[in-house]
Length: 114
Length: 112
Picture 1 (cartoon, rainbow over the protein chains, first blue to last red):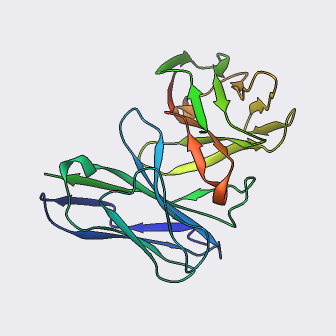
Picture 2: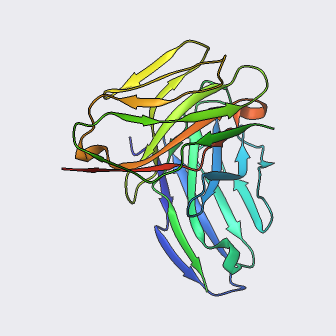
């Protein structure tokens, strides 16, 4: 099992450009999440998908959109990138949305917006 | 709302020293508590968890006990190794869709 995979690993954008971060999991998990990690801070939830066909806003959704393409894949789109979106982005999944469920994380995408 | 407060870092220890990283939380009801570890250039991975009061999570020599009376989940290890150098995150899960709240992370460096 590959677990949670993310592409690309690194990306540099200019202000105003758009891009999509891809995430896939092969563990048959129902719930998927997008986080951003900034220096000296914990992870902040951008969007999540409790199950296939549903998505909801997290703590910091502004400037982002998501698509739960199918049970395996959950993409994050930046329509018009801004320097404030420079960060490391992590996708995660869990078996369900239960409080006891462990989250499994991808290796991250390091995004720089100039 | 829910919150997690972790001991500020960075923490630097010599090999075989005793480690404690403090974590306290604020949450309604009965959250589950987690410690995740992040090695350089990698994503987070579960280190241990506890799902109810007085539970002790343990893994790879690390331990943490869910203390509801003090709302704490402190991470301990009796003898750290250089390979334990990483960033450690305390987290809780509670509420809608089991969303997690993370602490800011504590960077541990272990020197030989």
